[in-house]
Image (cartoon, rainbow, N blue to C red; front, side, top):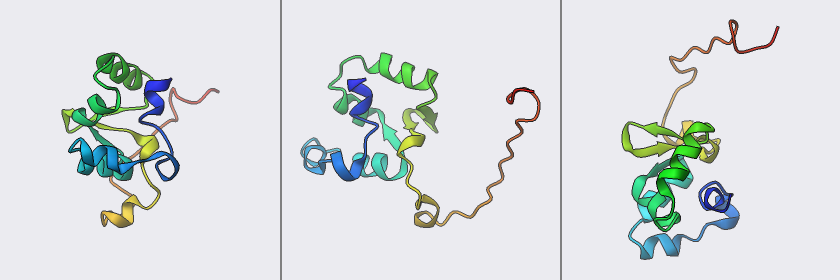
Length: 107
């Protein structure tokens, strides 16, 4: 739990950008806590190289994380900000269709 809480946290309360700037990871931190996209380097830094593969696997299995465009970038949905669409000029609804009618919902 300690490892996960280093990543999934309220950035307004628990984010010290100086530590990321010192490590040369300021842009990665801003992207992670703003857009929900974490780099492998940032994860290595947050978890101090300890159990990184285990934590990534755990987060992927529990749907707290998924790979994003490469094996070195990860989407963390819980870190997405409500205003992400306006900051990136996205228009909704996107070309995505979710169909839970068959096997997802209990009858």
